[in-house]
Length: 211
Ligand SMILES: [Zn+2]
Image 1 (cartoon, rainbow, N blue to C red):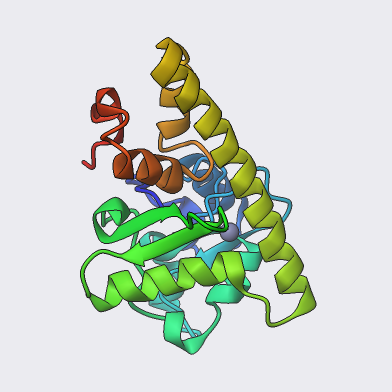
Image 2 (cartoon, helix red, strand yellow):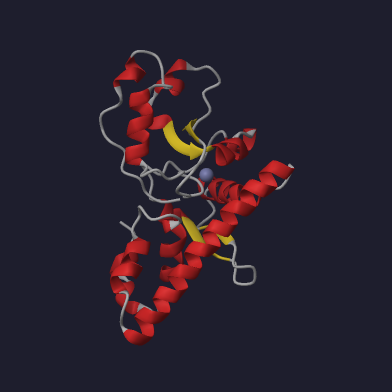
């Protein structure tokens, strides 16, 4: 999860009583850079408009621009549990990198999210994100989560290669920097990995700075 800059002006359809409209979808795609705010995958085949706080028919929550997020259908369905209806980090207002250590499980190479501190919001969001990558209670969810982990590993392997070239040949800085950009797929993890290994890459400190 990474900080997203939401546009200030709410799409007009919300004032007309619908969130399932073209202008809402277009603005979410733009603001979120086409990435699911939970798994940070790109190139998604199935996108949905998700409510951070579940609305249960409440019109205010349903049409509040600040409550609408771009999500993939997999993460949307994983989040659709009572325990995740509240107390999930609002990545448009909070700085997720201050609350979550998004890193790599050293033995499996899979994504691993740990809360920083013990706030309910950090703990709950870490659990949700780990679920998005690991939920396997149905065969479909298992297959979807596995596809996300595969995409994650491909991105991280590319990062490791570029970091090697950067460290040993002092080359590829622009490529590494591009992968640390908040718009990049899995940027929470590419940035988290480098932040956790700053001893090896002190030159990248500014690139992974938390605002
Ligand atoms: Zn997702």
